[in-house]
Length: 280
Image (cartoon, rainbow, N blue to C red; front, side, top):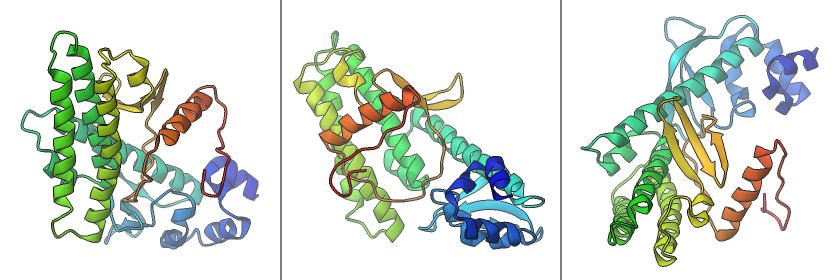
């Protein structure tokens, strides 16, 4: 019986038998799912139900209290596995919708970075920062042969962005905003370092391996998809909602792991880093 339910909603494979029985046993009251959401989603702790319509889900809330409005509300009626599938789909569509909106904002000539980072959820703000970096770095690399100064100007621009981010952390911030900006800084320090190395290595082409080996973020408007590329692998962003968590510092080793793992996934293989505690 449980196996059948798991085949209908594969994320139930990560839920223990007793917990799954509890979810299915309380299925008649949709609000009881709140205690179990974290075992099915990466970071959806609660959902907000409509005040008038008992079963209607309007938004999701992470462990840190960050929320995302659902593009299409979900009716939590019928079999749990069915409406949880609808909720999962709706969450991914909603995250994608915010990413699309963010990528349009990035293209606006009056774009202001810090305002942008404050107004979006941490995950999307971070993605925006990575898409911005990818775009500006590729413009610079593309024009490097004709414009001698563009690489160092762009390098300086990334340093300026870093200083802007650091300046924000000196203000009075809420706990969540602080985590958010610390994460931006963690990732952007790495991005700045990469570009600085490209300048020193006199890289002058977007096809140079020194550039293609980095994780690069694009929004492909023609196919309405967010892409993450590394070496010759182009992966679709999965739109799993991650909330507002801190990120590990990226070292040269992390970068090499990303390359190996991306290659493995591209060949439909798995990857398991092995080493001392905390390696994975």
